[in-house]
Length: 120
Image (tube, rainbow, N blue to C red; front, side, top):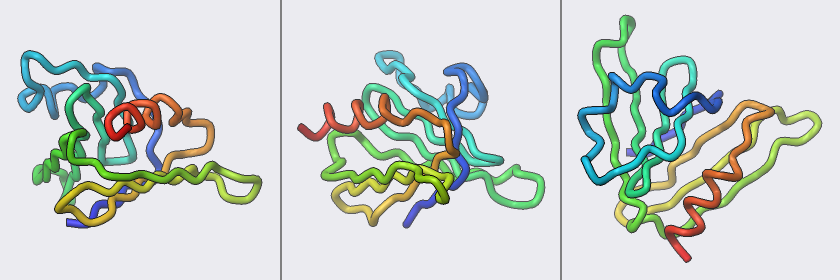
């Protein structure tokens, strides 16, 4: 699965918790949470959780879990004057590239710190 989520912005750690709380382990801590119009990226101390809401009414959901230990590389492109989105690309063993685009003004440095700690 190649994943791409656009127009992400940071939200509170409890925002939409009912969508993903069942898949968070007892020893796991939610560190960051981002939301687009429909989709989500949740970052814990153990994994990236990508929630792809599908269909017209959004009843169908695809959950993709990427353990931080499987992430092999990432790259970030900051937003510019004419390009409003910051872009993050993540590679993990056994998975194609994942792309995330964040709305201008969304601070993705905490996410980059989590990824950097995971792979370095």
